[in-house]
Figure 1 (cartoon, rainbow, N blue to C red):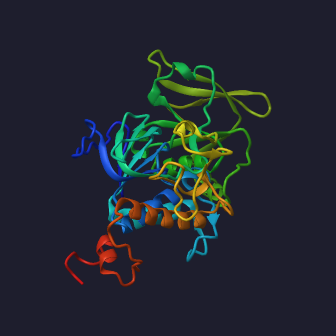
Figure 2: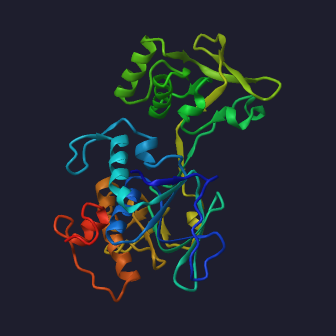
Length: 368
């Protein structure tokens, strides 16, 4: 079972008491960022029996791991001598599944404001509204936005013809697809489409790709089988029919010759640009575009708002995934103490605690 994913066009609306705004989603915790640290934050909050919604500007969970190095090996995750970014994200999603978090993808948190009752109002770029008892900012180096392709004729195309996000394989069936780019994302998109029988070409300015060796070998195998067409050159013009539907892209090869590549769908991967975004306007104390936190609780200058991972700053900070996991653990404990000040808080172990095992779904409720 995987966490529930909501798109901007299909966002869950959960009503509740306590003077909630109409249509606002009420939750124990809102996690901003669905990278590895944000996902592990969900897990640690789940162990505290705090339910989560997660918002991320990207169209898939995983943050930098999924977008920048999905196939590159990671060697410093405990108990995993080596794993890819994709594998790490898949394992984390499996780990949080018992807690049923809801992922709101493809939207950015734009506003955060404290309420008189101690909770927080949060709004996103898609119009989704939340009321959360605690907020956890796991935004990495900021909100990632894809670098946009600037090309004559592009602005006249129907919106469905061009995308800077990962392709939906099922929607591409029967289409002629051109992927522009040479990084891991571009190669993965082209290969995945080809592996599902989609007619696909890959256009990049060089015949050497800045991608992981495994991705390059994957591409070369598919190209040798005639399932991916590789083109070298720079795009110069997008072509469309009278209805604004893409018909192809002109490109200039290294010798200066112009060629036309037929295509009905264009997917662009020119890298991602991190930006701080609206976070800087929320009144949180910052230093050099990082959130100052108290390192025993990882709480920001606004009580009830926590920051974990690459977005925070404190003495001795190391920007490592494993350090972010530690921060998420302490932040979850701090939030549990703040939200339940009169409840006993005992350190429990998943190996022996019946309560934790029930939360994880490995022990039936009522069993000891």
